[in-house]
Length: 420
Image 1 (cartoon, helix red, strand yellow):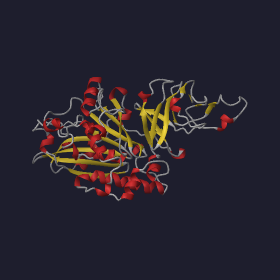
Image 2 (cartoon, helix red, strand yellow; image 1 turned 30 degrees about the vertical axis):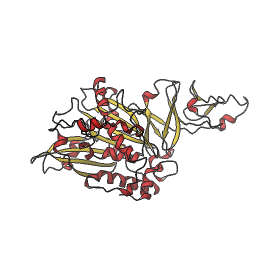
Image 3 (cartoon, one colour; image 1 turned 90 degrees about the horizontal axis):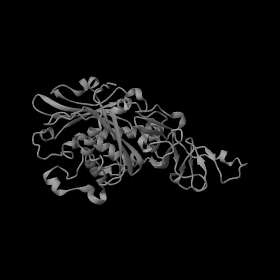
Image 4 (tube, one colour; image 1 turned 180 degrees about the horizontal axis):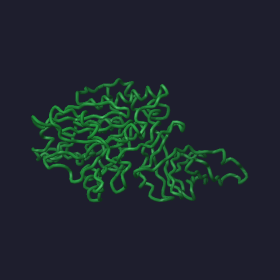
């Protein structure tokens, strides 16, 4: 349980807030590279940490990320013309390059030097693994770009999608790192009475703090001889790595994959969820049919939840009570759609002072403490955890059967070792 003051401290991310200062120390996913498909294409609105921005790909293919509102009369640069290596405001023709320099000011006399004294706020960007990353923090403290195993894979082995969630990012992260809810919220086949989720709905959760964040495990008893153990890696401030090689009555999935999320704060009440999957076998790339099946199962895909959401609070997230009685536990289609529903159902920012946490909430408690610790470290002039890729680049996640009595910590180093 957190006090109301602690809750505000970890959930408010705008300029000038303690958590906002922490978040600005990290590179953040801003949008997918595919959302800017070609040079001089239409610009895209982006919101990060309460700042309204606009992204564009210039004539040379570079990505710019500018404050949305033109410094002249504050018209939106989203309306702008993307042409000849700059974004031109349609109001008076002022044009800005990817670095925020005003390169043309046709509404002023040609002899004036006014344009040389005007700059638009601009943030550095880098493209990696199909994602445009942005850094909004102090230039002299800019860290290395994140470097996880899936980011080093060839394009044929990685797929990333993005969804907008209508609640605070801490709610989203806590929902993602809660490993126990899958036995209930994601029980998507009530007819299967032999599957793992029906055998072991309870779990023990154990957390091991690391320099980058923490690793944690959900341990479920299968029988007198073995446990099913899911080991996760969480990297500050919002990266989760998990295995998708789930055990069930139907066996493992057809293609071994790792997956995860990055829950990026747009503002205090909206979050961009970047969802990635990675084919762990070098000889088995992702194929369009597999991606489509997975995304559809998760509730995304062609007709599912993307940036444009269909299932919202206004239509009760599409809950079907007949489906809830006969097909799945929630009456909501799609694993991630179920996550969105319960997390958004708490309200834009949940009042954590009213909660009653149990033993299976240890990862949630660990995350909150990480955020509070990071705020103190930042205020004292230090480096919050997860800034340095060498502390986590060698890690992945794993799930496996372990003989009862064997500690997951004793096998984690080998089982969660990145292969790339």
